[in-house]
Image (tube, rainbow, N blue to C red; front, side, top):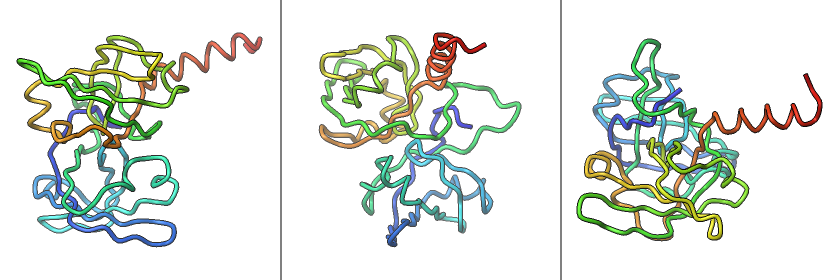
Amino acid sequence: MFTGLISSLGVVEAITKGSEYAQLTIKDAKICGQIQIGDSVSVNGTCLSVTAFDNQQFSVDVMVQTLKLTAIGSLTKGDLVNLELATKAGEPLGGHIVQGHVDCIGKVAEIKPAEKWVALSVTIPEEKMRYVVPQGSIAIDGVSLTVGELDDGKNTITVWLIPQTLELTNLGKKSPADLVNIEVDILAKYVERLVNKKSAGDK
């Protein structure tokens, strides 16, 4: 489990693609000093397992299904990626519950700078809009954010990025049409499941 509070920014050093997988090598000395083989690391909001590491970089394997369901497949060498280590028992939950299981791929629709923040609008698939509410939580490329506005007609969500978020994550480097990983609030999916079961007459 993760919290959506980014530990550091890594740089994609290499991408090796096979027929059914890809291997990413990511440079980040801070993360490398805290991981072991098999540890889970959130890479742009996608939970991946460490397969190799040294004191400067680490590698993860990405299976074909993950490449289809996330924006990981669109990464190129030199891209910045948001990294977060799995939350340990007893650590404070500073953001919200983030599983690292991406629900869909979003596309940056608009970026509007303001005096002290940036408004980032992202288009997501229509069927995922029902899980998003104003002032609710959402993870964009693994970053825990609060939903500011919804536009159901355009299937867009808008979040406000404060200077600290712009500095510590890759969201400040996004451009219109960029792809991002979206994970909706897990609580919304649980509520939907319970309501549907009750409506069907299950006890």
